[in-house]
Length: 418
Length: 118
Image 1 (cartoon, rainbow over the protein chains, first blue to last red):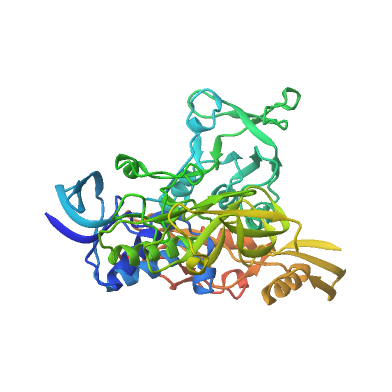
Image 2 (image 1 turned 180 degrees about the horizontal axis):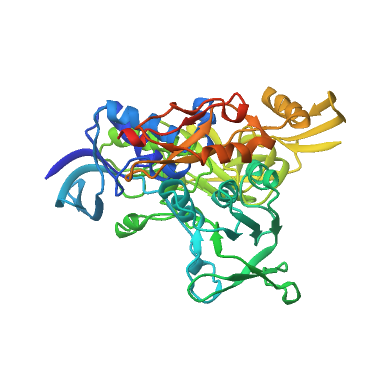
C-alpha cells in the first residue's frame, strides 16, 4: 500500500502545478498519469502563445509544460505514468485509490485527492451529423495528435466544423503542411475561438469562415468523400435552398470541450450544470471533503496560465487540508453571466479572498460586472469588451461583506455603463 | 481608416489606423506592443511560425520547432519547405539550433522540446 497526503490524478499543466505547490507546502505528493509522458495536451500544442500572463513570454506548449516538468523533477515528486485510476473508495477520513499499470494493480491510501483530469472534445456523435460512417472524421485534437506527435498527415483536403480555438489552430497547421482547408463552418452567428486566432490562423491564410453554417451530412463508404453544408436560420435549422456538397477527404470537428469528471461522478461529487465541472469553494475543494478540482476538469479555460493558477490553488489548499465542517455562501451567475467559479465561499476559512473566474453569455461592449450580496452591490468592474470565448478573472476579498451561511452572491453584467 | 486585430497577446485589441505608409495614426491599443504590431503590419508584416521536423528516431518521429524570431509573412511557405527538408539525426533539446538563418531571414529554426533527451 502506497501512502500519500495529496494524490493528483492527471499530469497535464493543472496536475503539474498542483503537485509542485502541494510539495512546496510540505505534503507527500503522488501524481498519476495515464500516458507515458507528463505534460498533457500541451505536448501536442506546438504553436506559441502560451505563458504570456505568467512568464511574459510567448512560449510553445511543450516549452510551457517543460518549465513545470523541470521543477517537478527537481523536487523529486513521485509520478506514476502509464497508470490508470480505476476506482476510488472512501476510507476513514481519506480515500483508497485502485491503480492499474503494466506491473499490475496497486492501492494508494491518501488524505486528499486533486482531480486534474482535463477535458474531452465533443465528438461527431454528440453533434448529430447524418450520413455514413466513413474514416476521415476527426476531432481537431486527434488531427493535432496525428500531425504534431505522430508526424502523419490525416488529410489533404478538409472541411472544419466549429470555430473553437483548436480547430482554428489546426486550420493553420494543416495549411502550413500543404493541406487545403476549404473552410471553417460555425453554427453560431459569432466565432467561438479567440479573435486573434481568427486573424492569425484564418485571415492570414485566406481560409474562409462561414458563420451561421453547419455540416448536415457526410458521404463516403470506406473513406469520407464529401460533406453537405448549409446555412442555418435563427433557430439553427438548416435552410434547404442553401445546401451544398463539398468534396473533401476529411471533416475535422472543433465543436466544444467538456470537463472530464467520470471519476468525480463515481464519488457522487456535485457537478455545476453551467461549467460541467465540480462545484467548488474558494480553495477549489469540491463539495466532497478532501477532494479538489482544478484546470479544465473544473471548467474549460482558454489560457493555460489560469489552468496552472487553479492547480496551484488546489495544491496549496490540499496540502493544508484538515477534516472540518464547512459553512457556505453560494455564488450564482446572474444576468449576462454564463458561469462563475468558485460556486461556494467556505465561511469557516480565514481566507475570504477568492479568485473568481467567469464568462459572459454574449458579447458586451461598455458594460460593468456587478457583484450583488443579498441584493446589495458590493463590487463593480468596468469592461470595454466581454466576449464568451474570453474567460475573465477577478480577485474579490469577501471578508468585508459580512457573509452568513446560506447567503447568495450574484454576479451580473449591466450594459451601457462606461 | 483601417481596422486590424492585434495578435500579440490574448487581449486581441482592435486597432484603428488612419493614414498610409509611415504617416499613420494608430489608436485602440492597450499597450506599446500594439503600436509596433500595427506599424509592422502596415509596412512589413511579420509572423512567428511553429512546426515539426522529422527525426531519425522511431520513438519520436517528429520534433516540435519554432523560428527564433519573427519572419516576414510572405516567407512563411519558403521557411516551411526548408523545415520539411530536414531530418534530425541527434538527440537535441529545447533551444538547440536546427537550421541557422533560415532562408536568409536572420531567424534560426530551434527545437522547442526535450522529448528526444528523455
